[in-house]
Length: 195
Image 1 (cartoon, rainbow, N blue to C red):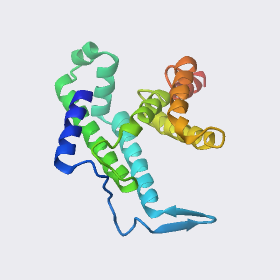
Image 2 (cartoon, helix red, strand yellow):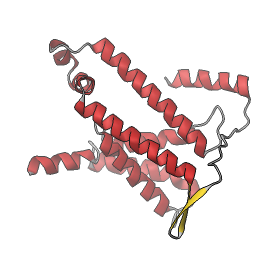
Image 3 (tube, helix red, strand yellow):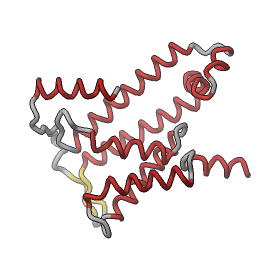
Image 4 (cartoon, rainbow, N blue to C red):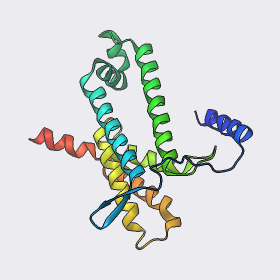
């Protein structure tokens, strides 16, 4: 997939050039006043869309036949096939849903940042850290991982220059892999099992 991404990136450079572009809407420069804080309306829309996507994914993974089939294939493909899971159909549908959500996320990010064919590289490391931090099989854990990484990066700017932000993500990744290899979601699973 990385090689395919590089091919698409170079095709993008050939078609559109290397100039940064922006998506401008009537909401781009408008904001909402929340007490002492002024929040751009675009940020609120993107946040709301992200929350809705997380809820939809959580319901899809935990409450539907497709979600159970997908989790069964991840845990034990042979046992899942024995009980009647169509592995090819589930894999195709999983890839399609993942691609659709990735495209939607790219569109939302395009509303917040200027972009070029190389857009997204700075989010790759953060995405990987968030997934490992949250846990590979938990949508709510990934949401919590994103919040934790955002808080750590935001408050680390007080002491550490912004150019070292990738190092903070790497350090957090190493700490999580050493202390919580199954992510933050494993803490909640232990708590519920103990109760």
